[in-house]
Amino acid sequence: MRKYLFPAIAAAAFAAPMPLLAQDEEAEAPLAFEEGDAPFSAMAERMQDPEYQREMALMLRTMSEVLLDLPLAPLMEAMGDVAGEDAPDVAPDATLRSMAPGADRVPEEIERNLPRALDAMGSMAEAFQTMLPALEQMAERMKDVAPQAD
Image (tube, rainbow, N blue to C red):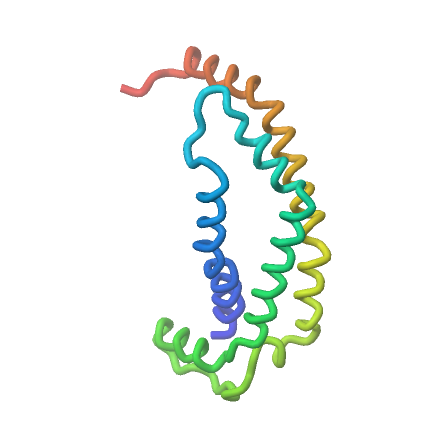
């Protein structure tokens, strides 16, 4: 049962903000790219923007604070139901923060390290944008030499 606890909490941590992030993306960036667009350049610019990095870091820090204080007993019961097992006894007021030593450091670590990670992702996007013409040429050559499926 415990082997399911941390993956379930991690999944909840990353699944919850996805609709919010999708709304931001839809509002600020087109969904389809036309010929001549440089989608990776725009993404690189955004990820390397200090204000965007700060906003993302603060949002993820806040989310991690909330998740650390989420009561675990209901989650354990639900996982027990899904697994078809009895849920382990967990104190009704138990939280991840109270059960995981050092969990108090996580929000601060996220806030401190996320801007650097976003900056690195932006650099990778810039590199990919630079490589894109060569990759497109390679794909065209592969079409010519690869056997066609019937």
